[in-house]
Image (cartoon, rainbow, N blue to C red; front, side, top):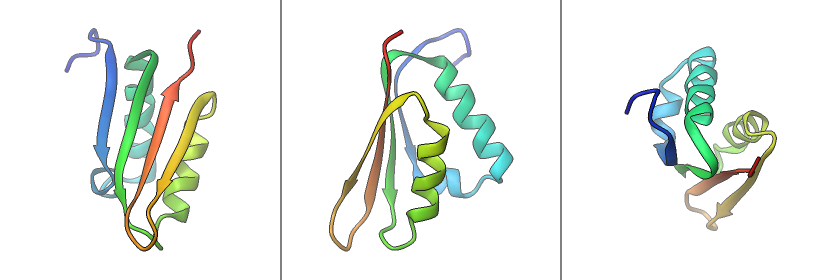
Length: 87
């Protein structure tokens, strides 16, 4: 991927974000958001149930202006979805 290429979809394992510092997570998410076309989607996979409230809150705050939802599976992982609103 290059910054010149527009993205339709971004899939990120939650573990990849967890390994980054707060400021690096912020920077990575902002770069990916800016490279995503209107109507494009971001998916953060496998957020461990019971440990995800701060992760989900952080993601939701980073995706203001996007349509966001979380798929909850009782006692299992959760998945965060965000769709970039059409301009």
